[in-house]
Length: 341
Image (cartoon, rainbow, N blue to C red; front, top):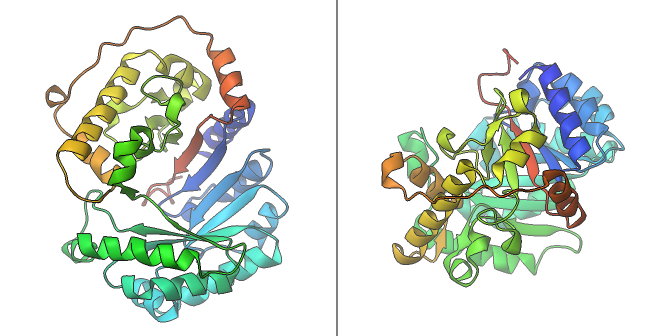
């Protein structure tokens, strides 16, 4: 994604008044245009976030974000020894330096921690380290199987019992952390909640469910402009359009009542049926489920006939904005694309 394309997209996001923007990775600070992207994000009047390991954060970048609505989400695999064992000697010191830059420039930051079998025993210590760094919150996500993982990483995935142990530990930690600091689980849902409220499975809007109204709660714009609904790991056949060619407003306007809408509705229902009737696990991983289901041959998935309704999309966008129901837009910078932009 070039700097001009990114600026055009950010302008569209601002004009539409979407809920938030996220720049994620790979590692956004390896993108050769990040120095021009930061001021564009800082000028937005909506929240923006950058997911980063923090190793490449530098003073000029922090100054560009100071006083804006941009926050950072720093990766942390555990306290000093655990983090360095996972990422290399000196990695924790780099995170400390990034946190210090955030604090000195009044940039809000959270901590994101992927939990493996190695780091599970250190969850409480990780929470303490995140609070000591000055973060506002820590988000724990169990390691998921999302494609080309090595045998070593597969061996690091939590067992079902370990995942239950993690969720129980986080429940206890929420009552122990200092006031103003928050502990969250992320990318894992509880099966009883899904049975009671199917829409919660898909991180969407209840009565504004994407299978019936408006849009998914998150859109991913890939470096080539492809727009994916809800999950970065969904199969490309579910793409809603191309933001560079069509513009975000047009992609969103044409989505409701389209074949893409029907296909996504079918996928949601298929995943839900599998979750409720095909599994007894007490929890689930949405991204894993949707990746696996969407990758199945198209003929194996049910299709829904969707009638295109006359619809004033500009009015719908205005109503959704007023209700706070417009999507977050994420721009993932893929590994290996830093040099090419």
